[in-house]
Amino acid sequence: MVDVSQRPTTTRWAHAAGVVRCSPAAVQAIRDGTASKGDVLLTARLAGIQAAKRTAELIPLCHPLALTHVDVTATADAASGSVRLGATARCQGPTGVEMEALTAVAVAALTVIDMIKAVDPWASIAEVSLHEKAGGRSGTRRRPTGDGGSVEVG
Image 1 (cartoon, one colour):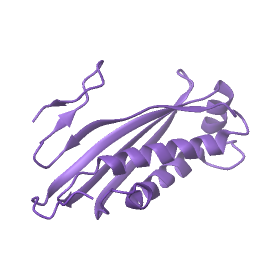
Image 2 (cartoon, one colour; image 1 turned 120 degrees about the vertical axis):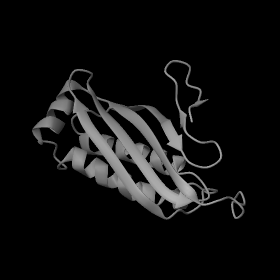
Image 3 (tube, one colour; image 1 turned 90 degrees about the vertical axis):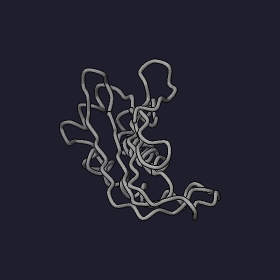
């Protein structure tokens, strides 16, 4: 692990997002609440929050953090045949929370797939990425549209 003991404690937060691509039948089952395993969006949100809290157990060199806030959103989008996921993680500490936000999205997406696989066994995860982060010496950084890189904005 990287030694962060000399870094200042600051408010850190990060937002990540991702998409589960699935069939219209799967989106309909999610929206109607008829998926055989229960409420897909609620369960995905809870799984994402739980995953964010356990990120250091899953990623070998990730620092364990005392998270002060985690929020996971999940929305079934019939027009695009997808479930859109977002996660924001926050802490007061010497290192960032990007991995916690990304882990929350990834596990929420896996949970959606698990819960709809009876309706759509070919659902897939796409576009899991960090969208914005703030805190620490790099300030605020936001993913620009188009090139996938990052730019400093504050």
